[in-house]
Structures are given as C-alpha cells and as structure tokens.
Length: 332
Ligand SMILES: Nc1nc2c(c(=O)[nH]1)N[C@H]1C(S)=C(S)[C@@H](COP(=O)(O)O)O[C@H]1N2
Ligand SMILES: [Mo]
Image (cartoon, rainbow, N blue to C red; front, side):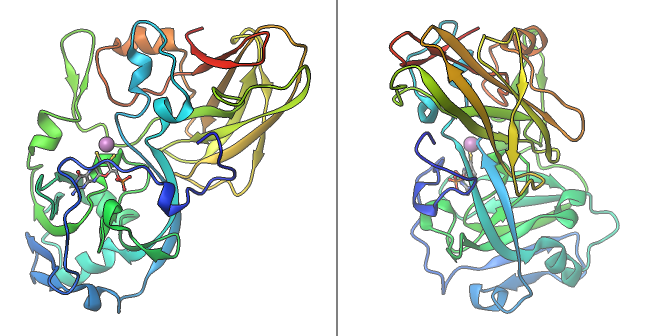
C-alpha cells in the first residue's frame, strides 16, 4: 500500500484471503447454477456467460477483518500493509446478476440469494435480493485480465461496498430463498461482537474509512521541509465527500484535496501539503461520506462497540513521526 499510487491495485498485488486455499478449477467443467425460488433453474458454462452483455465498474474490496491489529491494547510496530493491507481496488468486468436472475424468473416469495463458492470451504453467504438486483456483478475479468485463481477464477461475485467475504469467489451456486440460510460464515463468523455480550449480524456495507499511505512506516522523511500527505478514503455506503488531515494528533484539521475520479464504493486518493518542521508530529486522516457518516476516533469506536470484535474496524488511524522522520503506529 505504501508504494502504490492512484486508486487501482494491480491484480498481482491484490490481497488474497481464502478460507481453504485456492481450488484448481477446470474452466470447461465449471458451472454456475441458479435455482430455488425461480421459474426456470439455469446452469451456465463460462463460455455461455461470456456471451451476455457485460459491465465494468471500479470498486474496492475490503476484508471485514482488515485493520483488526488496531484492536490490540498496545499499538503494535506494524506498517500500513500489515495493518490495513486487506484492501484492494480493481476495475471489475462481468455480467449483472440482475440480468441472470431476470432470465431465471424470480418467484415473488424470494427475498434472499444464497451464494456458494466451489472451494473446500464452500464459502456461502445470504445476500438480500435487493442488492443482487441492484449492483451485483458476476465477474469474469479483473483489471482487464481474467480473474486470477487466487481471486476466484473462473468467476466471482462482486457486491460493491459489502464486506469482503460476501464477494464469493469460485462462484458455483445461487439459490433463491425466502429466508437467509444462516450459514457458518454468517453465524459463527462475520458477526460483530460488541462490548455488552451482544453481537451484530448481517452488517453488510463497509463503513466510511481512510488511511495515510505516505508518510508511513518504512518511508522515512529526509529532513525538514515540504511533504505531501497522501492516502485513500472509501465507504461502502456511497462516495467520499470530504477528507481532513491532522498533523497534531487531531487537535486541528485541514481539508485534503480529493483526486478524481470520485466514484461510489471506490477508494479516493487524497493529498495534502505539509511543512514538516523536524519535530515530533502525529498524522491522521478523517473521512466523511455522502451519507454524512464520519470516521470515529479510536476512543469513540471503543465506547460504542468495544474492542473485542475483530470486524469492521474503521476508526481514525495515527502515524507518529519522530525527530528522525521515522513513522510508527500509535494510538492518539
Ligand atoms: N469461495 C470463497 N469466497 C471467498 C473467500 C473464500 O475463502 N472462499 N474468502 C472471502 C473473504 S474473507 C474475502 S476478504 C474476499 C477476499 O477476496 P480476494 O482474495 O480476491 O482479495 O473473498 C471472499 N470470498
Ligand atoms: Mo475477509
């Protein structure tokens, strides 16, 4: 993350999170089946899907467990990729799920789509039908090339803005149902444990978030002077409206410039000019999305949810710059 520019992650550098390794799928044998509460159950080969009208969209993908290192009681000596590296952004190309569901003919009783992967984990999640009909894509391509084996070849589901695990890789089955399936991946996993012994289930969109990629650990400043503070901001609920940057641990804030394109459910690159006087400083960024959601401080986040849940951590992050110009992870 600290060495990249712009908003797109090259496919070969996209993070990979697989619960049971990468299956070795023969694209000629692979099928995508749509069944359940539909008039006409359908089965697609990769070849057949490739003949449907396709769309491209730029969207981020973030693991629900990203940044969970910041739940630790003491700030750990980690860099931006070790803390926040389960984030990527691609231009995804595929067939709209709505197109396929329309062809299958959705029964009016259907409310959910259960998506299942062809890996040993049979990763499965229940997706609200409204999302499936809105902007879900069955992706065949990532950044212009075939989706790589590690990212779901020959096809994966993209649910723009929704937590990573719902974007089922090696997609093989979509079952329409009246109720959620309550799969292992949405009951024992991917619920958000709160501080009061309760848990949130089915928290789909990633909340507004940002991070500074430069300066960051491993990119030492070379003496006092002018530097650009740069990073990424994103929200699963919409577009980024504003990013503010602080160099004094959140006491004062200045607006950062947003580099276009500013797309919904895609990261935005922000930039702010900074004159480093050579003294200790604490750099922070704070994003606001177009629903009005603002990134909380770590204290606010802990007050609301506690720090026992490992998912959807989106609090403001801090890099301390020391007199030598080295950056480190701190809580401020
Ligand atoms: N079939 C299947 N789909 C899956 C997974 C998996 O293990 N199996 N992992 C999920 C998780 S937890 C995340 S964060 C994203 C990661 O996508 P990526 O590996 O392409 O970055 O895929 C999701 N889709
Ligand atoms: Mo994940």
